[in-house]
Amino acid sequence: MMVAMDVEESPPAYKKILSVGLLLLATFVVAKFAYALIIPRSKKRLPPTVKSWPVLGGLVRFLKGPIVMLREEYPKMGSVFTLKLLNKNMTFLIGPEVSAHFFKAPESELSQQEVYQFNVPTFGPGVVFDVDYTVRQEQFRFFTEALRVNNLKSYVDQMVMEAEEYFSKWGDSGEVDLKYELEHLIILTASRCLLGEEVRNQLFEDVSALFHDLDNGMLPISVIFPYLPIPAHRRRDQARKKLAEIFANIINSRRETGKTQNDLLQCFIDSKYKNGRSTTESEVTGLLIAALFAGQHTSSITSTWSGAYLLCNPKYMSAVLDEQQKLIDRHGNKVDYDILSEMEVLYRCIKEALRLHPPLIMLLRSSHNDFSVKTREGIEYDIPKGHIVATSPAFANRLPHIYKDPDTYDPDRYGPGREEDKAAGAFSYISFGGGRHGCLGEPFAYLQIKAIWSHLLRNFELELVSPFPEIDWNAMVVGVKGKVMVRYRRRELALK
Ligand code: HEM
Image (cartoon, rainbow, N blue to C red):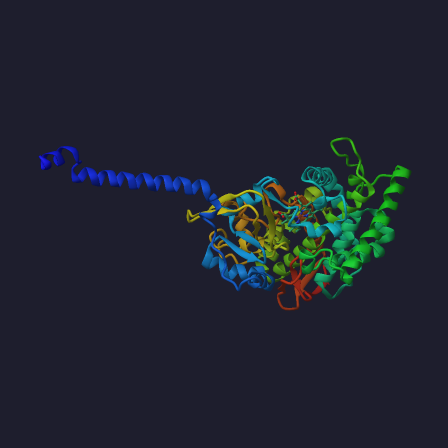
């Protein structure tokens, strides 16, 4: 009976095993669900962290050179990894597969304001990173409007004039430091097109000296402590004040006389916010300083690299000369916006120099939301809110799965049939950033560099007499180390 009852009332062994199994499964599912609810998503798939000594280790590695660190860590860690910087985490997103969100995310998710705060004492109050995103967006609209094709056309005429005047002072032959020459010419051109003829014609020396002090006041230490009471910062602040006075006078005199000009200064004076408010004198000054900081060193560095590569690559030198000859045959000696736009070969040569040497080597954002990225190997990572997020044009522009022989100067890689900058999708070529905050001055920069180089190619035979330049990794805007000595001899490409 006992046995019979056992048989009737207890489940058979296989049923017991099944129920225990089901119970375990249910417990596992509930546990997983609870884990997902309680533990934030970001804790589950955090990017790998770079090994370094506690507290200062990450900072030391970063300060020794972010590109050296990336070269060491990328092969071990892959395209997404975190470096601990004191109390902050900096997560790198390297390559187009993982950096799309970096470029496309709205300001509410990935913002520039915190990470680019160090510009505030230089640009001054009330502009760019000192104002809310809505105001900043309007100020960037002023840039966009000021750099429209019609305005660019008149800037080009001024660029060409400046180049002609500058190089007319060279002798029939001689030796020059090309880096110094191009830096100087670009300051003059920027003064005319951006700051206006009052500065270019009467106040050039004073204003250049003040910009020099602003420049020298932006040091690596300024990124972390922008208001540290050091002499360089004091000089920066005094220079900013004096510039404000100079531009207030120019603006007032333009307003009083009703005299208008074709320059960025005039565009900023005439700009209006959506609510109808005009820009103040202080805002105009700040926006001009921002334009000069964005466009001056970047363009002069790119002009120098472009020259250095052309002078060392006879194949491309003869291709750009050929192109100039054809344009002279078609249009005579004239150079204007439309003719510069026809210089495709020269464009690709400049673009390739800029791929190998982007002056802005690191771009940063601050993350306000958790977000996920998927690597090209299919691994997903969650990047938590609060991380500084970084990408690097200098490193990403040389990824071998995007660019064939990435360290070789090969302007044809952008030509028809190859287009390596597009083949792997958007954000493969990021010297000008891209997406939401892509460079607004890109067309201006190309026009300026093309105007200079077409003049040099048409009027001089050039030879690099110093070794091929090295990279000055210590500069805030990374450029060419030392002098770039060039021997020149006057010649003229003529109508055939
Ligand atoms: C070869 C020359 C240049 C290079 C390599 C360059 C590079 C860049 C890069 C990488 C960014 C994106 C920054 C980021 O995403 O954090 C940027 C933004 C910007 N650039 Fe340039 N730039 C150049 C010339 C210029 C010039 C000539 C101007 C103006 C006259 C200019 C104005 C700007 C502005 C206003 C932005 C901010 C856009 C925004 O945040 O919406 N740039 N540039």
